[in-house]
Length: 556
Image (cartoon, rainbow, N blue to C red; front, top):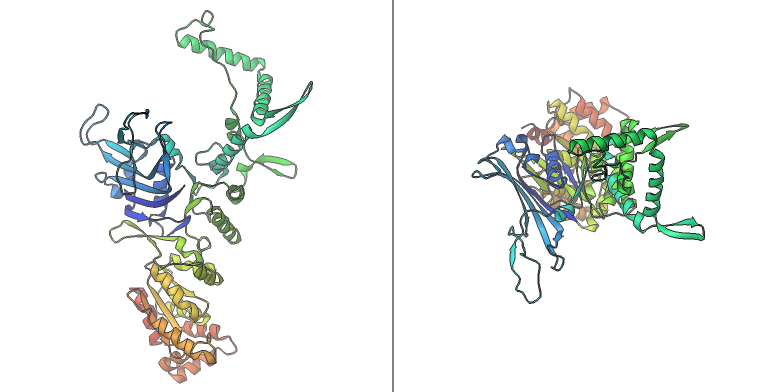
């Protein structure tokens, strides 16, 4: 089961948002853009076995305006299933919708204006789903009625595992809500019935299920526990309970019997805890530092993937928390593996948790001019060939473009180092305006990056040399075609700038030859990229017009 479509209206910062999450879906965007609220909406409706209007608060309404209904609608692929009667056919339920509205008039249970939660199972077109009105009988004509509410067995198919910013092991203890470790131990418990254990007998041995053997050992443990103090506590509780119910503890002792019983195997598993041993000292793993606890949480994710469990939906807030950069990249790869059989939707601020080759898995979350949240995915088609081509560009610095409000794409290190220095000289703080200068690994990659950036609606500037060293002397026709392709990128979102024939040529022309030579001689014996960074940072150096044209619109 996975979520194919998410639609949210009037929930917290989200006025109206609809998007289609991928198997591994990264929600990126600035603080307060609505990423966490998307996860909160999914957690709210899927994370509770029973949901009612009391689960929502005043702050959950967009702009705190309770007059507008909150709507959370999810479409699933494949559809969820439901069978009302044992003899009836199974039906598909593609859409679940929750609407927090208000009673229009008073009822025996509520006053007019009180909150009311409407829960619906729907077809993909929004129409109701018909189900048999009564159990089918041979020879009778079937009568149908709309399916009302969301049956518990349907809701159970759409449960989620939530990992919030609290990475303590307490939140992932087997008995905790949304615990992934608890989900893993449920599978262990199920396997107890099918696993066989050989036990010795007087006449040899016999086979029993692991569950039967486990419960026998628990019964023995219970007998050991029944020391006088335990028995006395049990007796006092039984007698006082009978008295409180109006019975005589002596005469009516056999009418009701209260006593301490055994845990079942799953309850026992959910009561266990992770322990940590260092040298000869053993202690609760929950006492470890935050980084070590987070490492164990990551290990639980890896265990889930290695055991090839499938069909879960994970909601993860800031997976990068407490992780060293190398471990971030390691965890990102683990999530990618896990997403082959499960769905993972996560909110991140880290370029290590997005990748240029997998740009189709990124959803950029931003605020509209009216304060609402919008979710944007790429409109540029991907392909295995394109992903393979982009794998050489797998670089956290380049991945930063997904988090930018503006992007300047350059072909090499010279412009990458010089442009931020010129921006500083023009009093343009690139970080404040959310601009990233991204070196794409050569002129041939500029058009690919430009199409990806603009497909997300991010404004971009493309800067290139018309006579680039990326092309050999016998490849001039190919270079001309590349130049034309880059010029053709011009649009409302993409500005194109060319240095003809090279970056240095434009500086010579726009600064003047003597001034250019003076600045070059001031920084002798350095590589081209470093020398031009120092020239750009030199307060005495003029800012070339082409550089101004590239940078000054960013300050608007």
